[in-house]
Image (tube, rainbow, N blue to C red; front, side):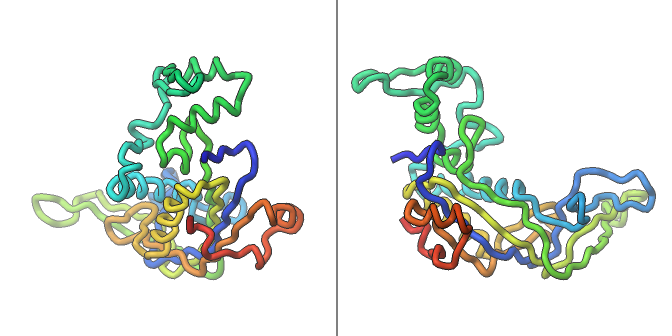
Length: 270
Protein backbone atom coordinates (compact mmCIF):
# COMPACT_ATOMS: atom_id res chain seq x y z
CA UNK A 1 0.00 0.00 0.00
CA UNK A 2 1.39 3.39 -1.01
CA UNK A 3 0.03 6.64 0.41
CA UNK A 4 0.65 9.62 -1.81
CA UNK A 5 -0.25 13.17 -0.81
CA UNK A 6 -3.17 13.64 -3.20
CA UNK A 7 -5.71 12.91 -0.46
CA UNK A 8 -5.89 12.41 3.29
CA UNK A 9 -5.06 9.06 4.88
CA UNK A 10 -3.62 9.99 8.28
CA UNK A 11 -1.75 12.68 10.15
CA UNK A 12 0.50 12.43 13.21
CA UNK A 13 1.49 15.54 15.14
CA UNK A 14 4.29 15.37 17.71
CA UNK A 15 4.80 18.25 20.13
CA UNK A 16 7.25 18.75 22.93
CA UNK A 17 10.04 20.86 24.37
CA UNK A 18 13.62 20.83 23.13
CA UNK A 19 15.98 21.48 26.04
CA UNK A 20 19.55 22.60 25.52
CA UNK A 21 21.79 20.23 27.49
CA UNK A 22 24.76 22.38 26.53
CA UNK A 23 25.20 25.78 24.93
CA UNK A 24 23.91 25.97 21.34
CA UNK A 25 25.44 27.83 18.42
CA UNK A 26 23.48 27.96 15.15
CA UNK A 27 25.25 30.64 13.18
CA UNK A 28 23.94 32.97 10.54
CA UNK A 29 26.88 32.33 8.25
CA UNK A 30 27.38 36.08 7.96
CA UNK A 31 30.20 38.17 9.35
CA UNK A 32 29.65 41.64 10.75
CA UNK A 33 31.49 44.65 9.38
CA UNK A 34 31.61 46.63 12.60
CA UNK A 35 34.54 46.02 14.98
CA UNK A 36 31.93 45.74 17.73
CA UNK A 37 30.07 42.86 16.03
CA UNK A 38 30.80 39.28 16.98
CA UNK A 39 32.59 37.27 14.34
CA UNK A 40 29.80 34.70 14.17
CA UNK A 41 26.40 35.56 15.62
CA UNK A 42 23.47 33.21 16.13
CA UNK A 43 20.38 33.07 13.93
CA UNK A 44 17.50 35.20 15.22
CA UNK A 45 13.91 36.02 14.40
CA UNK A 46 13.95 39.05 12.12
CA UNK A 47 11.09 40.75 13.98
CA UNK A 48 11.51 39.83 17.65
CA UNK A 49 15.27 39.38 17.63
CA UNK A 50 14.91 36.15 19.62
CA UNK A 51 16.95 33.05 18.73
CA UNK A 52 15.35 29.88 17.37
CA UNK A 53 16.29 26.48 16.00
CA UNK A 54 15.47 26.25 12.26
CA UNK A 55 13.19 23.38 11.30
CA UNK A 56 15.47 22.72 8.32
CA UNK A 57 18.40 22.10 10.70
CA UNK A 58 16.37 19.62 12.75
CA UNK A 59 15.04 17.78 9.70
CA UNK A 60 18.46 17.65 8.03
CA UNK A 61 20.03 16.25 11.19
CA UNK A 62 17.36 13.54 11.47
CA UNK A 63 17.66 12.60 7.80
CA UNK A 64 21.44 12.30 8.05
CA UNK A 65 21.04 10.07 11.11
CA UNK A 66 18.58 7.81 9.26
CA UNK A 67 20.77 7.63 6.16
CA UNK A 68 23.68 6.33 8.24
CA UNK A 69 21.74 4.10 10.65
CA UNK A 70 18.91 2.39 8.77
CA UNK A 71 20.98 0.55 6.11
CA UNK A 72 22.81 -1.17 8.98
CA UNK A 73 19.69 -2.51 10.71
CA UNK A 74 17.37 -3.58 7.89
CA UNK A 75 18.08 -4.82 4.37
CA UNK A 76 15.14 -2.94 2.90
CA UNK A 77 17.10 0.29 3.50
CA UNK A 78 20.46 -0.90 2.16
CA UNK A 79 20.01 0.82 -1.22
CA UNK A 80 18.90 4.14 0.23
CA UNK A 81 20.58 7.16 -1.25
CA UNK A 82 22.58 9.86 0.46
CA UNK A 83 20.63 12.87 -0.76
CA UNK A 84 23.62 15.23 -0.91
CA UNK A 85 25.65 12.82 -3.06
CA UNK A 86 23.41 10.48 -5.08
CA UNK A 87 19.82 11.69 -4.70
CA UNK A 88 17.06 9.52 -6.14
CA UNK A 89 15.92 10.46 -9.65
CA UNK A 90 17.54 13.88 -9.59
CA UNK A 91 19.42 13.73 -12.87
CA UNK A 92 17.39 14.13 -16.04
CA UNK A 93 18.83 10.91 -17.49
CA UNK A 94 18.09 8.73 -14.43
CA UNK A 95 15.67 5.98 -15.33
CA UNK A 96 12.51 4.83 -13.59
CA UNK A 97 10.53 1.62 -14.07
CA UNK A 98 6.80 1.15 -14.24
CA UNK A 99 4.28 -1.47 -15.36
CA UNK A 100 2.52 -0.51 -18.57
CA UNK A 101 0.36 -3.60 -18.38
CA UNK A 102 0.50 -6.68 -16.19
CA UNK A 103 3.10 -8.41 -18.36
CA UNK A 104 5.29 -5.52 -19.52
CA UNK A 105 7.83 -3.58 -17.49
CA UNK A 106 8.89 -0.27 -19.06
CA UNK A 107 12.08 1.60 -18.20
CA UNK A 108 12.34 5.23 -19.29
CA UNK A 109 14.09 8.40 -18.23
CA UNK A 110 12.29 10.57 -15.71
CA UNK A 111 11.89 13.27 -18.36
CA UNK A 112 10.16 10.80 -20.70
CA UNK A 113 7.88 9.59 -17.90
CA UNK A 114 6.91 13.14 -16.95
CA UNK A 115 6.03 13.83 -20.58
CA UNK A 116 4.09 10.58 -20.87
CA UNK A 117 2.01 11.14 -17.73
CA UNK A 118 1.72 14.94 -17.82
CA UNK A 119 -2.06 14.60 -18.09
CA UNK A 120 -2.23 11.94 -15.37
CA UNK A 121 -0.50 13.40 -12.29
CA UNK A 122 -1.67 10.61 -9.99
CA UNK A 123 -0.02 7.93 -12.15
CA UNK A 124 3.10 10.05 -12.45
CA UNK A 125 3.27 10.32 -8.66
CA UNK A 126 2.89 6.56 -8.31
CA UNK A 127 5.72 5.82 -10.75
CA UNK A 128 8.10 8.28 -9.10
CA UNK A 129 7.16 7.08 -5.61
CA UNK A 130 7.86 3.46 -6.58
CA UNK A 131 11.34 4.42 -7.82
CA UNK A 132 12.67 6.54 -4.96
CA UNK A 133 14.31 4.94 -1.93
CA UNK A 134 12.46 4.43 1.39
CA UNK A 135 14.16 7.37 3.10
CA UNK A 136 13.21 9.70 0.25
CA UNK A 137 9.62 8.44 0.50
CA UNK A 138 9.56 9.75 4.08
CA UNK A 139 11.88 12.78 3.97
CA UNK A 140 11.28 13.80 0.38
CA UNK A 141 13.56 14.53 -2.56
CA UNK A 142 13.54 16.64 -5.69
CA UNK A 143 11.15 14.08 -7.16
CA UNK A 144 8.87 13.66 -4.12
CA UNK A 145 7.40 15.96 -1.50
CA UNK A 146 8.34 15.23 2.11
CA UNK A 147 5.90 13.52 4.44
CA UNK A 148 7.69 15.05 7.44
CA UNK A 149 7.38 18.73 8.27
CA UNK A 150 9.26 20.28 11.20
CA UNK A 151 8.49 23.83 12.27
CA UNK A 152 11.10 26.34 13.36
CA UNK A 153 11.48 25.89 17.13
CA UNK A 154 11.07 29.28 18.85
CA UNK A 155 12.74 29.85 22.18
CA UNK A 156 10.49 30.17 25.23
CA UNK A 157 11.03 31.49 28.72
CA UNK A 158 14.25 33.05 29.95
CA UNK A 159 17.54 32.59 28.19
CA UNK A 160 21.06 34.00 28.17
CA UNK A 161 23.19 34.79 25.13
CA UNK A 162 26.87 34.12 25.79
CA UNK A 163 29.83 35.50 23.89
CA UNK A 164 32.61 32.96 23.73
CA UNK A 165 36.15 33.35 22.52
CA UNK A 166 38.40 31.00 20.62
CA UNK A 167 41.89 31.02 19.29
CA UNK A 168 43.84 28.95 16.80
CA UNK A 169 46.86 27.09 18.19
CA UNK A 170 50.27 27.40 16.60
CA UNK A 171 51.32 23.81 15.82
CA UNK A 172 55.04 24.56 16.39
CA UNK A 173 54.90 26.43 19.68
CA UNK A 174 51.67 25.00 21.08
CA UNK A 175 50.58 28.52 22.02
CA UNK A 176 47.99 30.90 20.64
CA UNK A 177 48.61 31.79 17.00
CA UNK A 178 49.13 35.51 16.48
CA UNK A 179 46.00 37.38 15.20
CA UNK A 180 44.02 34.11 15.02
CA UNK A 181 41.54 34.79 17.78
CA UNK A 182 37.79 34.95 17.16
CA UNK A 183 34.49 35.12 19.05
CA UNK A 184 31.00 33.75 18.60
CA UNK A 185 27.57 33.83 20.21
CA UNK A 186 25.74 30.89 21.72
CA UNK A 187 22.62 30.26 23.77
CA UNK A 188 23.37 29.10 27.29
CA UNK A 189 22.56 25.56 28.41
CA UNK A 190 19.05 25.08 29.81
CA UNK A 191 17.25 27.08 27.13
CA UNK A 192 13.91 25.63 26.01
CA UNK A 193 12.34 25.62 22.55
CA UNK A 194 8.86 24.64 21.33
CA UNK A 195 9.02 21.60 19.06
CA UNK A 196 6.37 20.56 16.52
CA UNK A 197 6.69 17.83 13.89
CA UNK A 198 3.89 16.77 11.52
CA UNK A 199 3.85 13.51 9.56
CA UNK A 200 1.33 13.16 6.74
CA UNK A 201 0.10 9.93 5.12
CA UNK A 202 2.74 7.66 6.64
CA UNK A 203 2.48 3.98 5.77
CA UNK A 204 2.82 1.37 8.50
CA UNK A 205 6.05 0.17 6.87
CA UNK A 206 7.70 3.53 7.52
CA UNK A 207 6.33 4.39 10.95
CA UNK A 208 9.52 2.80 12.27
CA UNK A 209 11.55 5.59 10.64
CA UNK A 210 9.58 8.25 12.50
CA UNK A 211 9.78 6.28 15.75
CA UNK A 212 13.57 6.02 15.42
CA UNK A 213 13.80 9.78 14.83
CA UNK A 214 11.62 10.47 17.86
CA UNK A 215 13.62 8.16 20.12
CA UNK A 216 16.84 9.77 18.90
CA UNK A 217 15.53 13.21 19.85
CA UNK A 218 14.48 11.90 23.28
CA UNK A 219 17.82 10.18 23.91
CA UNK A 220 19.84 13.32 24.63
CA UNK A 221 22.52 12.18 22.16
CA UNK A 222 21.50 14.69 19.49
CA UNK A 223 23.79 17.59 18.64
CA UNK A 224 22.84 20.43 16.35
CA UNK A 225 24.43 23.56 14.98
CA UNK A 226 28.10 24.49 15.01
CA UNK A 227 30.99 23.83 17.38
CA UNK A 228 29.71 20.33 18.13
CA UNK A 229 33.25 18.99 18.42
CA UNK A 230 33.88 21.21 21.45
CA UNK A 231 30.71 20.11 23.24
CA UNK A 232 28.10 22.56 21.98
CA UNK A 233 24.70 21.76 20.49
CA UNK A 234 23.41 18.94 22.72
CA UNK A 235 19.60 18.92 22.86
CA UNK A 236 16.92 16.60 24.23
CA UNK A 237 13.21 16.34 23.49
CA UNK A 238 11.05 16.26 26.61
CA UNK A 239 7.34 16.50 27.50
CA UNK A 240 6.39 14.68 24.31
CA UNK A 241 2.75 14.62 23.20
CA UNK A 242 1.60 12.58 20.19
CA UNK A 243 -1.67 13.25 18.39
CA UNK A 244 -3.22 11.13 15.67
CA UNK A 245 -5.69 12.49 13.13
CA UNK A 246 -7.70 9.83 11.30
CA UNK A 247 -10.63 9.90 8.90
CA UNK A 248 -12.89 9.42 11.93
CA UNK A 249 -11.82 12.63 13.71
CA UNK A 250 -10.71 14.64 10.65
CA UNK A 251 -13.87 16.78 10.61
CA UNK A 252 -13.41 17.71 14.27
CA UNK A 253 -9.72 18.53 13.70
CA UNK A 254 -10.52 20.69 10.67
CA UNK A 255 -13.15 22.65 12.59
CA UNK A 256 -11.71 22.78 16.11
CA UNK A 257 -8.00 21.98 15.91
CA UNK A 258 -6.13 19.59 18.20
CA UNK A 259 -8.05 18.19 21.17
CA UNK A 260 -6.92 16.10 24.12
CA UNK A 261 -9.00 13.17 22.92
CA UNK A 262 -6.82 13.02 19.79
CA UNK A 263 -3.74 12.15 21.84
CA UNK A 264 -2.42 8.69 21.07
CA UNK A 265 0.95 7.70 22.48
CA UNK A 266 0.90 4.45 20.46
CA UNK A 267 0.17 6.11 17.13
CA UNK A 268 3.57 5.20 15.66
CA UNK A 269 3.15 1.51 16.36
CA UNK A 270 2.38 -0.38 13.15
